[in-house]
Image (cartoon, rainbow, N blue to C red; front, side, top):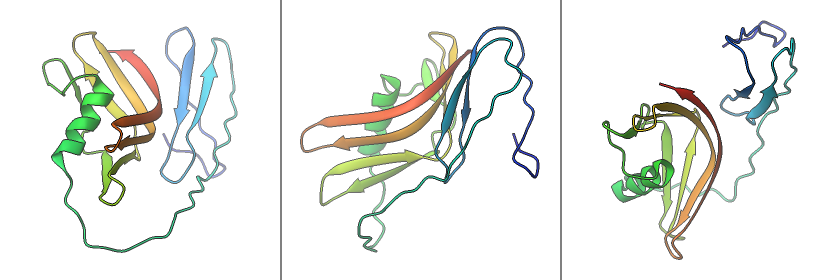
Length: 151
């Protein structure tokens, strides 16, 4: 959805019930707002995402490692992706960075990951905030928000 010149937009929500609205855009902090039935107007302030980087070293590009990709999807989905059971419709969306010095995998994503779960009959939009896996101590941490809907 796009805004007018003053940053406003109109969104018609079909049906009844409560909703959770997620606003995200590359370079901005994601914002989430619960919307209850009967609310006519909601104001959401979106701020630029400030990221301080550590020292940057330019080096030759390291090819992605398939084991990192497999690990990410298995952890996120709870099992290996399968078109028959559970899969992402945009598996190219995440960016993988494996640091050979620290043995740590970092995954980022600029758009929601779209997951289809045929076993449960649900579709999930998952907005990944952060994902890291430390291979030294086999510790994974990730954080995000999701929206669930029927297929």
